[in-house]
Image (cartoon, rainbow, N blue to C red; front, side):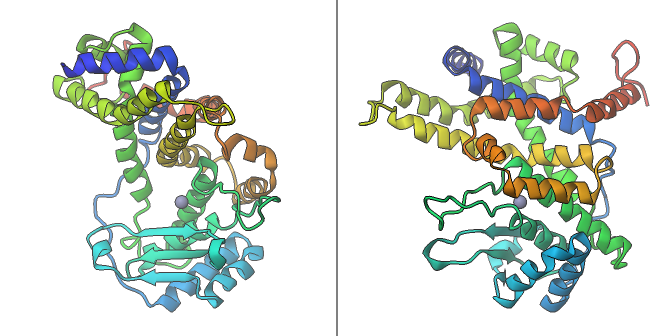
Length: 371
Ligand SMILES: [Zn+2]
């Protein structure tokens, strides 16, 4: 079967029976478009970062100073991480292969474990901002399930928790350069932008088929070219990129498609629920999590000049306390998630930014201006 044919068959099913998934694909595409166009005023650095190892004590002290500057009330919490040796710096040869830092916040209280931050790679100044990112995750995951107090409800890595962490990670980088006078060739302020740029690009390729199908009912090369032009979607108008978008779509959709085939034949469990629906739901929730970095970074770029540090701290407090957010984001109902994406898409400030960008690139006839 030709790839194009296969894509259209998948989309027939998706749009007929799983409109919410299709909507999500459309939204992801438009969101990535916004990201790619709306943040182009961030200057990618060409020089690359110089990695200079620093002692663990410098990493910990710098981070403490920055956390104290973010909010003195957070210092005690940070100190307990340090005192209880819950900031773990592992040196692993596997991770030496990666240029970037790898780290995560492990919030598990289960089996007597306490939350900890795990970082791979010997520290450099860049790692300070990574540590701040992971530490901020610990400040908005405190909601506790009353029925099962040891099992913390998890808002970790949803868009909003990521957004807060990204905000203060970037705050830390600027602090290192501006206040602690760390040479700016050791900190790359554009790294977050570039890694998300790549992610958004992949998302866009993967999801462009949804928009074409939604608009024209058939995915083909001609419609691909028209949609790029109409929505100003930053993909290349050539056959090679069109084919690569089909490949990406098939790869990502195959998993969902297979789950759906099972889904349609599955028996009910004793409570009358489809057994696979839960699995499918989990799988799709995981898909949403993957996209959170694009959404949350987009959110960061769109509010960084509008909101103050205090605004973000206030927001973070609500994030940790407000149970209505729990309804929206802990067990994502797709319509609510889509609604959230739509709100993000309708951010007026961001729209203006994109408008200005488009005006600087396209002339009145919608043609790309000659440089
Ligand atoms: Zn994170």
